[in-house]
Length: 501
Image 1: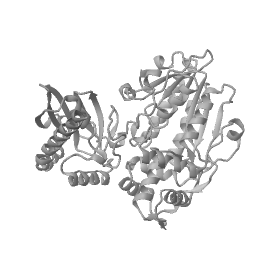
Image 2 (image 1 turned 90 degrees about the vertical axis):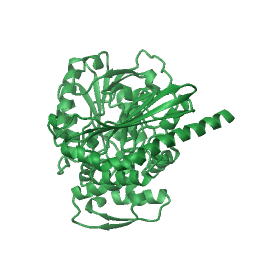
Image 3 (image 1 turned 120 degrees about the vertical axis):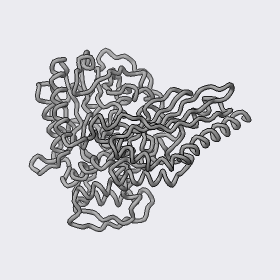
Image 4 (image 1 turned 135 degrees about the vertical axis):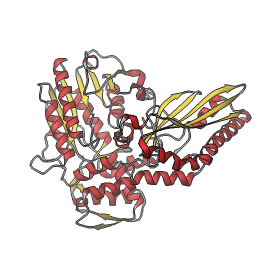
């Protein structure tokens, strides 16, 4: 989750309120849909592969959580459920991601039919069937067909570009415009689309879930504005108070080259960027008025949608982000045999500080992002740039909150793997590496103070994995001691201020 938000109270139990299963509740749309459903009086259950990722959601105590995946056994998850919301996708996650999406959707549809589910609500993508659709849009349509293949009624909302703080589309737009005053762009910047605000997507999904009278079928949804990507960039620059951006259109910039350019400049990983860019070739606009007749909700315009997203981004009140989901784009490819790895290489350092564990924990959980890493900042920036060049997340993701961390949070090119208040913080690297890496801080009370043990652990993969560790080891000799000393010093300073107050 990105941003704590206000606590969500337990909704009143209404006899006719539907029991709803939300898949993808830790993702961008799902994390915003759950509180909306609770506010509407629904009884909500969340399906999660890693339930701990939901522990810090403000609505966690108001929902039931079941461990599982859409491609597995769903008997427990679907038991007693009236409506399921399908928000899971695998876009760009490996060469067979579309096959995986279709298989998982087919499994979900069969399990839903066996459980006697009344309805599945699915968020898909716009695009005319007669067009030569991108792999992303073809898969979105195919998943909708698979969900409807077993007789359970399906309400499929097909949307274009979703504009909201933290959405992949908005973050791609934001970084491109803010970073590049002059952009060399392919012809796809002139393709028309019909963007829709995330608040409108949530309102329409909620209506589709709670309105039993809504007929099943496909509903094309969008905002009132039909614009090109170039026009979106121009509008963003205006609303962000930036000088007008110059777009230099060229006819030969392929989607692959565009994706690497997007991956370098924005937090969107190259495999995901490639699929999004290829989809921009297709015109994605609403072609009928069925949704306008069926839903009373009216969507806001693109200008207001961007203004809201900008305000939330600047205020640090982004409730969810596209990087909240598990992104295997950043995972190292398991191409080496088992015998080529298995050795853990570590850098362990310990320091004692008079600051109590709670103060040290607060300091550790505030590391990264704009605060930095205490030592070798230029080296961290260089490592982040190299990571982006090879398709990793780099440092552009930052962190969701300047002070708070939760399991599953992104933290620059790390992911929070474990947290025990006042005792432990463990990060797992999502940078591109010939192996796997972790960074852990363990806090042990030492009289009135704390003994901090900082461990950098690396599990190399093959010869290149070992060569990588040897290459970076000289930098560790001053980065890691400086980091640990900075944490201790900041904790002591915060403790002194606290005592004086």
